[in-house]
Image 1 (cartoon, one colour):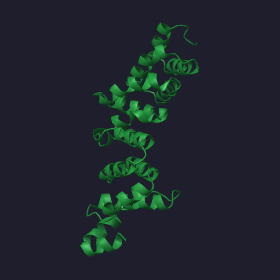
Image 2: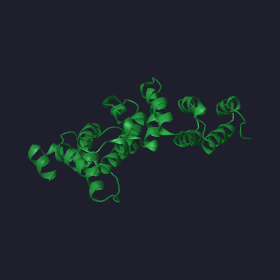
Image 3: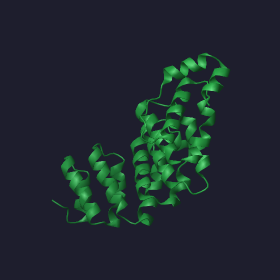
Image 4: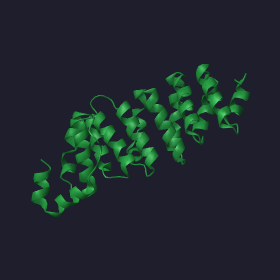
Amino acid sequence: MVPVNRTQHRDALSAGNASTRLQAALAAGTHPDPGLVDALVARCALEPDFYVRDMLTWALTRLPAQVTVPRLLPELASEHAQARSQALHTLSKIGDRGAWPAITRELLRDADDEVARSAWRAAVVLVPDGEQAGLAAELVTQLGRGGRTVQLSLSRALVALADAAEAALGPALASADPAVRAHARATHQLLQDPDAAFEPDVEAARRIVALGPAWVETAAC
């Protein structure tokens, strides 16, 4: 049942039943009410259900950016990883480039993988024209990080930067770190062919590095 007033709506957003919370988030997006923005943002920070979180983000995108963005930005400094991650995710969906200065190096290098992944996605959406090269240079510092899912997220962010990423990948393609080198090579392959399989070959990179600097330089070409 759709809540009939703000108090009931806020209560429904925090109900014990996920289906009730989902319906409340759906209602908030169907009938956008700026008076609910604080409740929606606050719920994003602690909502355990993926589908409800996704609906909360959708509901926030239905409100004017001038209402939602100022409320989301403080969440980026939250001590709670989910609050940071969901705020970044929502900012990427809103697409207001005025939020770009809030996408800091600290967020792009966040120790929490989900926060970092959200920051990478938000960054490539919000980066102003002329700043892609700087962003690409920052993103390549994270090559080799995490498992396949994390690495694929970073590679996709770099692919979205196209020529800027191509230039930034150069040193990493000759890195003496096998994990960095393998990730860089897999990313470079995606840049050449977006439909290519993403399979960083760390063992192959390790063998090349073991052959010495001359082989590393040759294999990077």
